[in-house]
Image (cartoon, helix red, strand yellow):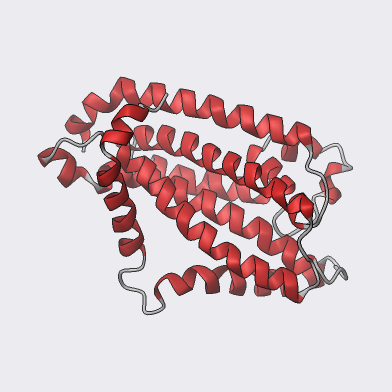
Length: 257
């Protein structure tokens, strides 16, 4: 598992890496962090117009459905991709100064999570506009988002190790993310596949389970306990696997970067 003692000892470095990640993400952007609010909103508008029309979607809350899925998938995609590149991206520092290498993928996951939490403001505004108001079920979103963080952390740590030794992983992960996106039911109703023989394709995707439970919390419904347990177990297994692979190979990083 992650060495919490080292994290506590190096919490200042971790916080600085998180700040650095946020600054670099918007370094050449005139809109800065405001873009993290505008981008999902614009994407939601396009997807609602295109897929809402194609699928004959008449539910006025469909934009909220799309945006909720788009935000969670966007965070998972951006954070794991950043973690995948984190060791190589910080190679110059790693060669000069000793810092626990686990801090690099961890900071990539965390700074993207902070940006993601800020972007939820857009979801709150859009939900209010389309008449989706908070209920007590919204409290369920807290553990669901925690599972999302754990899932991203586990996958990110694993990918950060693989990315050091296998550079083509960056391109393969881009393709994998596309497949993951299509099995997350972001821009189509999950019920279209859940009632078919292809439902297992969605249910095997832990990110889909997280997104569906988050949507349940947003729309005032109880979460699916089976989805929650599956996503949680998958996330914990990935963290254990990712940390084991990382610890076993981190001393070899210097030879590859």
